[in-house]
Length: 172
Image 1 (tube, rainbow, N blue to C red):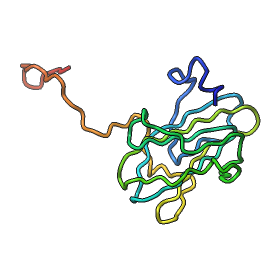
Image 2: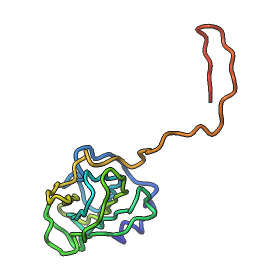
Image 3: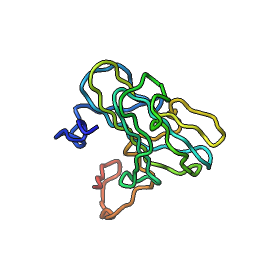
Image 4: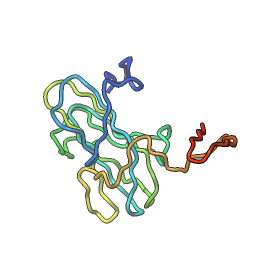
């Protein structure tokens, strides 16, 4: 991953951006010699221990925060070489240790992947406390990066404006 992390444009000037709308899985076989960061928030449906897996070609790392703050993220799983699409058992480090999560709480999640040449893929799955696995984590459990979870705050109230009926009043 150092090839991605050491690029002068990483992380603030990506060549492209987009949204994953179906699941925590990026499209496969889209190119060579690139990196990607997939980030957002995950919301567990039940309280208990969750296990995560990451699958990728080439190497990758999966991070999870104990809350919605990216600064608190810790690496929980990785791929050191490569795997096939949704192949979860090539390396022991692809699987996280159990992580205690609370139902309805928002957690920041991030996956980094660096692609050399050949095939490419990235996906994340989890096992719920019930033992059920969601492969990959469905979009219904996720929120996109940048989602605001609190109501906006009016820091400076607008001044009164007088306007004729059916006229226009502008507040900034």
